[in-house]
Length: 203
Image (cartoon, rainbow, N blue to C red; front, side, top):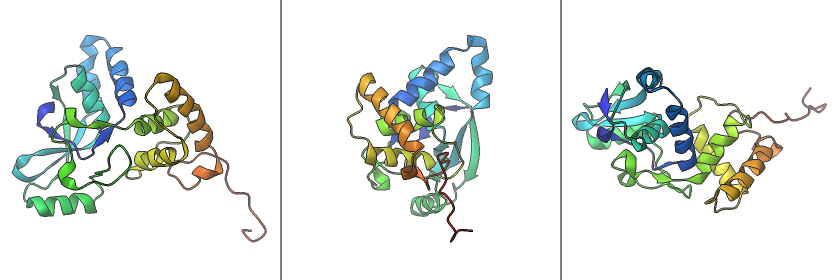
């Protein structure tokens, strides 16, 4: 168990609607069942220089639980890189695809702009959009590194914002489901739409 306040994000953004959905899932549980539920969703962390803890999976769960007032969460240590210098640590994290410093506009930012704490992560509505499209069956969840960001950027390219109201988000979700199943999304991880028809050249 680790204090949420001691965790450092390796991403700049989360999707606020997706965080709210995870809060709703947790709040539906009986109070006595919450500890077991947390144990089933441990925060994956890497130990960095000076024993600092960096989140490498479940950013949305951590933010949801913090917003609910939960102070301590279970953590699963994926790697211990505490022996590395700060420079070598971030080189290793980048090489292993365990840091994704892109802002809410899909633009890459310097590592130094990563949030210092969970509360400081910014909202990217397109991350919520890709999550709800996946939950609605628009594409299959896969373990490919940062597949969620690829889908978010795909929707960012094809669906005009802002998505700052329930009405505009709902309309974007309907369009996102159509796009996810269209040939435009072919090649994205977890794509479930129609496959390319075989031609004589393919046979």
